[in-house]
Image (cartoon, rainbow, N blue to C red; front, top):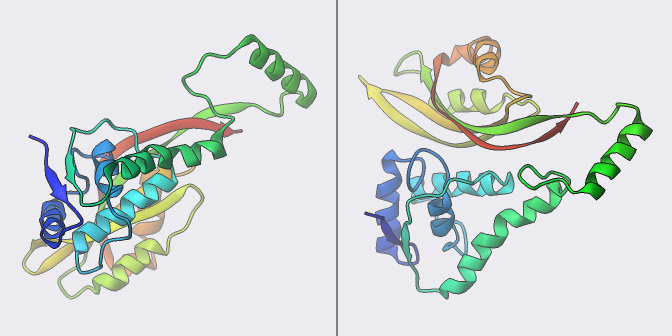
Length: 233
């Protein structure tokens, strides 16, 4: 049965905050149209007092900027005191805004004769300098574990987010109890597959100095493909 939320009422916000306590998305294990439906009901970002809603909202907002929400979802229902038809239009138009930036990328449409001719002309002028290969984006959920219960988890997260590289975008995070007073950091990241290797990120950046002062180990919890696109060689 689909979940129902009214994000414009305090009780509805609290209900959603509790619902997201043990979830990264509204339904399933990757961003879907259910997340878009709920996201579109917020005229402004949720208050920081709703920790889980704020974490989820910031992550979906980051994915929308990357045009990476494609899963169908399970048909979540959203109750709203605002005019619904304007919000659903916003949801439909949100990914389209980023589509303009990638207007030269058509992964699913058939190539016309004119496009083939134009491609051949460009290839002849550039003399094989415009080759492209297919790449993609993935959403990855990491478990980052500290050494013990005395590890400063704020410093640990700062160490994680301080790692910068082309094709890597850090997303939402939260602390999860492990046991004996120890908590682990769960953090989302979006990567361009051909630019970022998760294994290399863990072995060469997260588990070496200076990050390993706080980080004992890292594990991949979930790894989901988001979309594909053409990447210049």
